[in-house]
Image 1 (cartoon, one colour):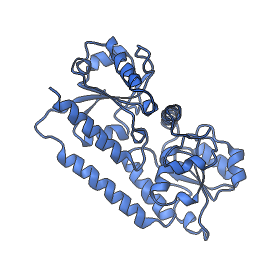
Image 2: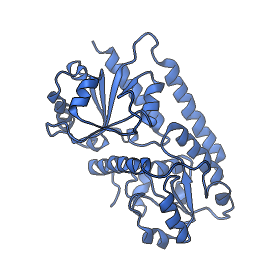
Image 3: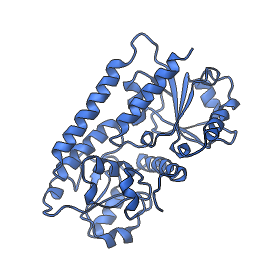
Length: 313
């Protein structure tokens, strides 16, 4: 599949990310140390040839100035635009091992919880380079590990400093005399069909919840420890959020009517405060969907959206 900047690919990206997240949640525990990282990559005398099997990890490589070393990427990679010309080798859930082996990379980048896939790669004589998960601390750690592994420490520290300073500004600028709004963050559902079905929301165990906490919002449901629980209309009605924010990059290239149709789906729950107060927002920016270096942009967009809702009469 060619990763073009299209609405269908954006939908595939988001669907693939959440399918991967469910898989990671069911995988083995994260090890205390990351095997096959660090010193191994530093011993490579020539520029290393890297394959990335996850969009967020691909973004990190390019953010650290390692784009020229990227040999191939996953089917879901779309950013930066340079990846459009690279070969595709499947993804974490369905890697094309034959294609990976044929390209003879020095390293294959994947997540630490992909123990079974990492072992498959080792048996083929390949080197998996394992990164942490998708919480904010994991993103920071991945940046540091990639910087150390590929001698990009200066770029890594510059990127980390920028991200941390921007997060600090968000935290310091959040209103202190306004009650925390209850926010339902919808990460996937069937949209524009006049129904409310197959709704997945952000739970309190991932980078979305950490971002909302940083900007002073209360993520609903507050006691849900799953990263992306499924909720039905009845459960949403009981939660009665002040604000509903939907992450929908697949609608970016659609006509404005598609966004309005997606909002109109919520007519099925007219009792909701968010619906009555017109505080339903659909964000189509592609950076909203991934735990990458651009997550700071996602946090800033969430802060802007919540501030807009709170300022509404």
